[in-house]
Image (cartoon, rainbow, N blue to C red; front, side):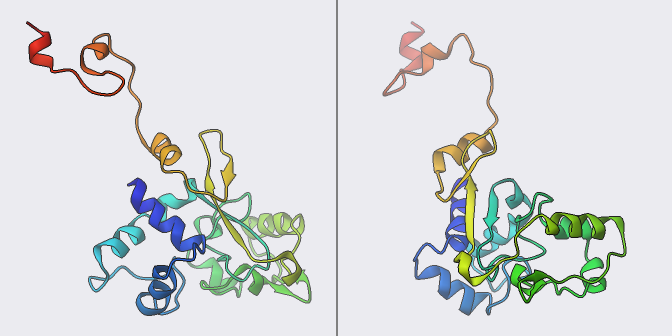
Length: 194
């Protein structure tokens, strides 16, 4: 699971890999990662990435720069989390913001541009957005961040070790652990039992 998550990190972090632009252009046909439908024509690697989309909000955040890369509905760029999980599939049509919209698409003339609120959630969204500076080209590119530990911090680097620690279920230490585990090897259990 850690290595599947790392591939997703590479996809979002603009790692410089040739694989990422090739995947975006040739497999996803320049569609948003969140909107691509899983298909048997995709490799096992790509399908495994798509199957993890629902769990990414625990690990992946987006820092807004120019707002052109971040998905308005699906990336975790506000304190509310992915907005699609709050508003559902019907509200984006009512709000006139397309599902494939970037954060920059919700800005006009340097200000947030949203129609009047029609629900409590929409009003909450407008209140949250009013506290955020709208993205501009002067802010540089959007950056994606990965969870850096159990306390909730995020960094611009992926750590397999930290991700593994976040994923694994820890069990209490058993009294016989020293019989099996050593610092650099493990013991031949049958010979130690006599």
